[in-house]
Length: 243
Length: 280
Image 1 (cartoon, rainbow over the protein chains, first blue to last red):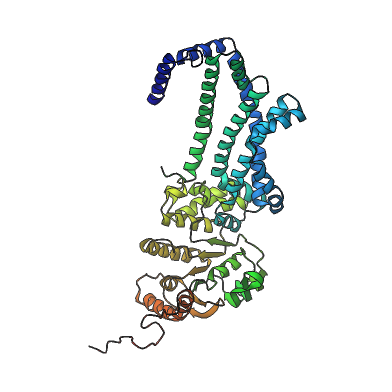
Image 2: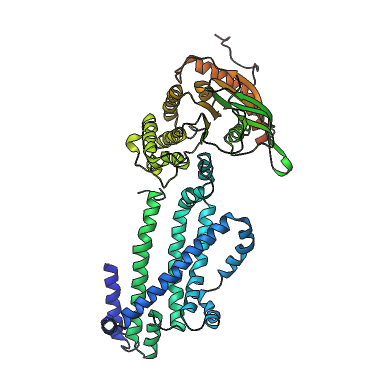
């Protein structure tokens, strides 16, 4: 916290000695943020972005875990889709946007495609590796205790892989957030990315910096509060972190 | 009387086209209520034999039967304890012990009563809410023992369950296992490479050899129970087993090491150079 205050102080001093227009200080940024909150521009944009993120990320999470599990456990899925997933992983998510725009038009569907493709594969790969690295002994032991089929999956394999899946989900969240902003920045109306673009068009550097601060704050808060807590709790009760 | 567990001509091969024989034409009968120790050097197939009885592996040829019925997979009448506890890290001790009962569809009220009974039997009732990583190695194996017993199987299969523990903890758990066995009269098949452990626990010590894995000697142990780790009879018997196994163990080492290796003095039974006290 002290370090953060120091950074803000350095920022304030630096902006005084430079061009206030291109490099506004923290006070200007705070004012710009206040105005955009009062006008409803920022809250609307945040809500819009968050709603998109939740939809796209939910799809990614469910599909990513399912695909990861299938890759780890079903031979023909690995043989067919395994290389495809690795290959597609090399494409930055925003590169899907031109294709998505042409296929789905300038709308929600296109941005969701980008968000899902941006986060799905990292969740898939993390899940696959988590399931693959389960100690085989646990599965053997479970089989001797009568666990088979669905029960073996639900009660043993998925819980055993959960720490790895949670890490993958955390990573996927970050990727989804980045993909969303990139998409909004480039083409799609509404949302934080577009406010950023609006600031550029209006030459309102204070607004641009203000939105960036909001993006950092939202990213940090969701990562720490949502996933940090969850991951720490899982790791602790799985005995992966010695308290 | 018909044996509880019977192996007939059991062969298990590994590798391409069965190039390596883990077990070759093994015959073994185990009667109900017996405590049988399988003892031999590493690579003799003792763990494979246990896994075949557990139904975790299938024989390449031959047949494993329990109460006359061929073993086709794991079953609730046969439970296994491994060298590592294999407890589920995400469940408390109590929920771990409850797990086999849940899989068997035992009603909740009865589950609670049985978990309590077996956790008290291994003296872990007080730590029932702990997670496995909060327990010592010995406590983990106690929990694994409760989990193996809670479904009230007729056969308990143990694969070097105490090998990773320190000597003191192991001694305590030997006594506990013997007490529980005298109380419950399960049929126990206990795999170990520790000859003293085999002599301490077994009604029978089945010795095994390597290349290919096979039974070399089947020794009945007629010592009174409960036994002590330092009983003179146990020590003497351990010596007998050790000498029997030494030939096999040296065979393994010779394959693993350079040609120049030779056993230390007194290695082979009756070898020259053993000091019999003639120099007094």
